Image (cartoon, rainbow, N blue to C red; front, side, top):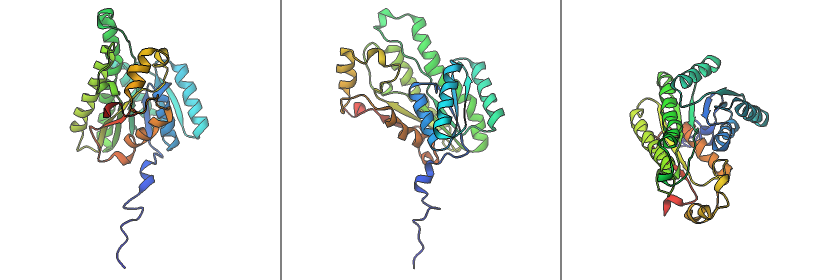
Length: 266
């Protein structure tokens, strides 16, 4: 009889998504897509670190995740746009857990409006969180990940980092930067055991999008831009996050995973 190569040792299948004993840091994890991703990682048995400027919101989310999944989850207050704050965050997590296996950069803000009605300060505010915060967080965890020969970095970009949309110059500029940062880091880290990929969500009804949910603009140019002609359900993002954050992503780096209802397929 020939040797069976279709066995769990060589082809582990669903076991590739088991995150038991792994530690995941999720910036912007207190609400929106960050909280959804944190819950998904907890369902795979990861320890989750919920990072937010709002400590009370982060604590509440961590308590909900721990109660729902029975996994360890705790909150850390941090402004990801602060170099000192991000360095302190990483040191605090390492002191408590001894490791960081996964970084999800989900902290982000959006300021909308025609370019001539926006200030330079508003533009810089978006870049500080969305771009500088992502860069600082990556820079802070990468030395630790390289030293262990393993790491998963998942940047939350956007479909608007790939396609344009009027009245979004701060946001689209920032997410385009995250896309290119992901590609560059994917190449930079390719032979270290650390991979860096990005998820590009389409329209999900998060707190960021609720203010425009019922507008004509959303109906025509956001929901109407998707082939499926609907908002994404929050659970529909979890599968992509589990892939990007798990051992299953070992041969992916610098990749963009679009979860956008077909927006970028057009």
